[in-house]
Image 1 (cartoon, rainbow, N blue to C red):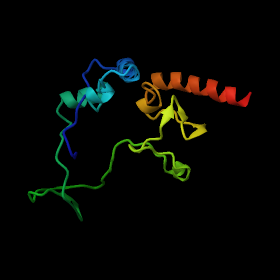
Image 2 (tube, rainbow, N blue to C red; image 1 turned 45 degrees about the vertical axis):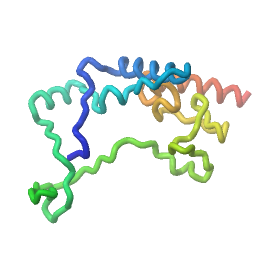
Image 3 (cartoon, rainbow, N blue to C red; image 1 turned 180 degrees about the horizontal axis):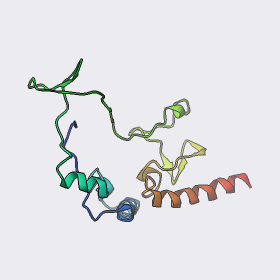
Image 4 (tube, rainbow, N blue to C red; image 1 turned 60 degrees about the vertical axis):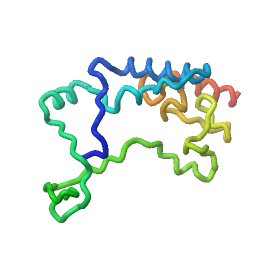
Length: 160
């Protein structure tokens, strides 16, 4: 069940392509040009081989969110229902930064403003892997390597 239909990335999009798109977005924004939309403009679900196989076999069926939990499953607004032994509630990806709340660093969009990976309000804090706002494609395995290398260099400079 989903609030909106899934958007699969094109089959030929892989991690390298995602990195390139995210990097192009960051460069465009840094240069003062318009937002390209980045990875989010492509879709939400990477069509890795098992996902493609299930999609092509029509085993992935999106249904609207149910309106009620029942003793044996779920019920939709139209009165139809489905049994369920278990419900796996996937709410999406959001950075878990509540432990940093006492530092009062969050900006108006809920993110901690950074220069590269360094938090602007606390220069000893570096954030890695949280998406484009902490470095181009830093939520990807390829992208995080670059931002991690830069963060290590900066932290090492503080310690010497």
